[in-house]
Structures are given as C-alpha cells and as structure tokens.
Amino acid sequence: MNNAKIRVATASLAGCFGCHMSFLDIDERLVGLLEHVEFGRSPLTDIKHCGPCDIALIEGGLCNAENVHVLSELRANSKILIAVGACAINGGIPAMRNHYSLRECLEETYLNGVGVENPQIPNDVELPLLLSKVHPLHEVVHVDYYLPGCPPSADAFLKILGDLLAGDEPSLPKNLLHYD
Amino acid sequence: MRAEPKRDTAIPNTITIDGQEIPFSIGQTIMDAALAAGVYIPHLCHRPGLTPHGSCKLCTVSIEGRNVASHTADRRIQASSSVEIDSRSVSACTMPAMAGQQIRNNTPALNEVRKTITQMLFIEGNHLCPSCEKTGDCTLQAVAYHLGMLDGHFPQLSPRREVDASHGSVVLDRDRCILCELCVRASREVDGKNVFAISGRGIDAHLIVNSASGKLADSDLETGDMAAHICPVGAILIKEHGYEVPIGRRTFDLHRVSEIGLEPVILAKVRHTDE
Ligand code: SF4
Ligand code: SF4
Ligand code: FES
Image 1 (cartoon, each protein chain N blue to C red):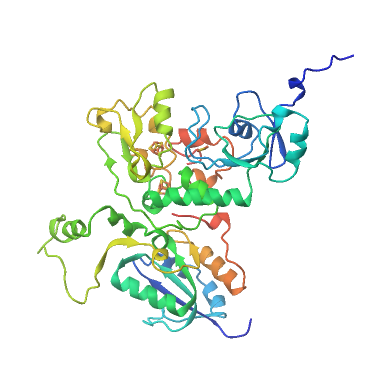
Image 2 (cartoon, rainbow over the protein chains, first blue to last red):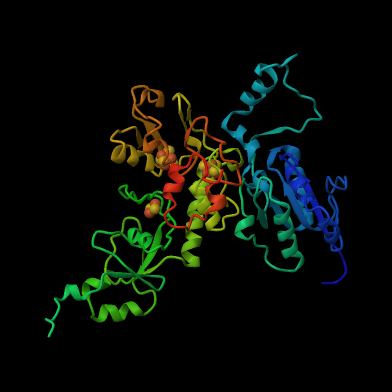
C-alpha cells in the first residue's frame, strides 16, 4: 500500500445515529485508524457533500426523497459501499411503519395521537417528501458489503475496515455476527 | 462354524454423512440418525417427538446414488463410488435412513442453498430483530448466524399480517410466522387439542386459530400447552415474560444452534439457569 490515506465517507439516513455512536466506541483505537484513513463527507466532519472516496459507510434505510439523493451521491462517488446496521440492511425499526399506509402514520402522529396540540400535518416545502414505504439500501443501489447489528459493535467496525485496509475480503467471525 | 448370515442381515445398518459412518435403526429418518450421532443438519420445521413435516427444506442433503443398499454389493455400489452419480436432494427429516446411503450435508454448496432459503424466510415476513422479543432465543436467527447470512438479498415483501393479542397470556404475531407448523403439530399430537392450522396457499398461506371468532381468546390454548412454547420464532409469545433474560445472555448468545439436544433448553426456558 502506498502512503495515501484511504478516504472514508459516512452518512446516517433513516437511522438513529446509533451506528455512528457505536463506531466512535472504538475509542482510542481511532487514533491508530486515522494513520490510515481520513474522513470526507460525514456527520463526524460536518462536510455535507461527497467527493470521490474509497469506502462509504451508510447507516439507516430510505424513508424520504433526500435519503435517496444522499445515497445516490455516495454510491456514485465511492468505490466500496457498505450497508451498516439493521436499518440499512432491511429497513429496521423505521420499517415498522410499512405495516400502515403513509396517511395512517401521519394522521396518528400529527392529528390523532395522544397529547397532540394544534394538530396539523407538516407540509413545509423544505421538508423532504416521505416515501410510501421504508426500503433497505440494496433495493436502490448496489451494496458491496453488509455489516449487521443494531448497532454493529465497535469491534465489528474495526474488523471490516481492518480487512479492507489489508486488502482482504471482509468477513465477520461468528461472535461479531448479530442482528440485534 | 458360524452359519452363513442371511443376505439382508449382512448389510450393516449404517449410513455415511460427510464421510462419517453413522448407525441407524429401521424406521429412523436420516435426521433421527444424525441427531442421535451428534451430527447437526440445519432444520427449522423439525422437532424430535413430532411427526416430521418436511416443509422448510433447510435440512436438504444430497444422497449419492439411489437406494444403493438394497442392491448390496453389486455394480451399483461401485457406481456410487464415482462422484455425483445419480446424486439427488432429499429432506433429511422425512427421508428414511437406508443402509449404505452416502450423504453429503455440511458442504459449501448445500449451505449456500440453505442460506438462500433462510433469506427468503426473512424477506417474506417482517423480521425486524432489534424490535423482537424473541431475539437471541430465535432458531431462525440462529440458523441464519450459522449460515453466515449478512443480508436478505431479495427485496423485502413487507406483507401486512394480523396480530392477535386477544388472549390473556399468549400473543400471536403473524409477521414473524414461518409456517413451520410446529404449533399445529404440538397442539394436535402433544396437547390433545387442535388450536392451530395453516390456511391459504402460496404467499397467502397464514396461520389460523380454530375458534368460532378465529381469535386466540376463544380457543382452548393455555400457557401450559406445548403449542404455546414451541414456536421457533417470535410469532407465538407468552405475555409478560418478554425481557426477563437480557439480550446478550439468551440461548443463542450462549449456545450455537449446531449443538445437539438444545430443544429442552429452548422449550423450558423462562429464566436462564445462571441468571
Ligand atoms: S422471529 Fe427471529 S428472525 Fe424474526 S424478528 Fe424475531 S428474532 Fe428476528
Ligand atoms: S406460529 Fe410459530 S410454530 Fe406456528 S407455524 Fe408459525 S412459526 Fe411455526
Ligand atoms: S427440517 Fe424442515 S424440511 Fe426438514
């Protein structure tokens, strides 16, 4: 490997940021990792748009039009795209709304729900349009690798990044494979 | 001098699974013989003691040569030693063990097929493990771990299925039902009742409850019934016991699904022994 650092971008779509928090749980091992990688577009750097990068780590599924745009931009700019966590892989908790129509969800949340004051469904033009269902990433773009878990443990993040940095095919040992 | 043994008794009652010779007695299936010998064949719809159902196909194995044994030491046996002749796929849980069967079980190709079947089971229902009470105790999930499943591969079908929370102590969440019929058989064969059945075909197949209203509350299901506990996934759950054992200390956090004889641990579990 030459000395150029590997560029990593990250994004949280319809997720809870739990995967990003778990990634940061690598704690002081982040220092060692930063010898080899640098972060581009990411909530960690607050860079909003994606330049060309080697690895994109994407948390969360797709629940609105903005999620789809961010995902497409990351896919177009990254060599390797990894679906991180339950929501990116199968929709996860946000996909529980797939049991209901979008109208039912909005009415329950903003009109009929317990404790709602001044009931009205938000319709500001700035708000991204909601998709009628929540979808996992692989239904929209090609996904190169999957890192399951809710969230994946810090060790699982390090394992998959370590494998890629070493030029190996990523693989998770059984003790790091969890869907919960 | 010993009398010449009769022709059939000369055939030893053994089968061979992945090169390991395993004894069996007449009437046993390949699954029975394998479990008795401590050999794991992945399975979801099978539970020792209940009539085999043969529906999930996780236990698919391949047999080289057909009924080799019944032809004894003739050219068929020689034929069976050359690779892949006449190899066919069967369900280990329903296929009777027969002397001389050469069976392949734990091969990359078969495990790949099993993984695909497992992925189809996941995307066909709504399996959101982080929100499921059964996580860590779920055999479907444990089999998926065993097979190294990382994703669902196929598009999610996100079906809309009915929850039946009418019963005082048991809840039926059809989102997670894999139609294995373990509850159906346990109710009929062990509990002496007839609480459950599968209705509909193909993608419309679903679990129904045998009561006038179709609701669990009006059935004669009780918490002591095996049918209330046997579900391998989180479709039939006992109310108010969901999180007694914390995630991370559950059956398959501590055990591998490939360990033999786990059924009592899974079935009897309310608290883990070391809690
Ligand atoms: S039943 Fe099993 S596989 Fe399905 S959501 Fe629950 S834990 Fe996951
Ligand atoms: S409710 Fe459970 S035991 Fe019954 S058929 Fe469905 S998955 Fe099998
Ligand atoms: S265990 Fe389900 S088909 Fe054999």
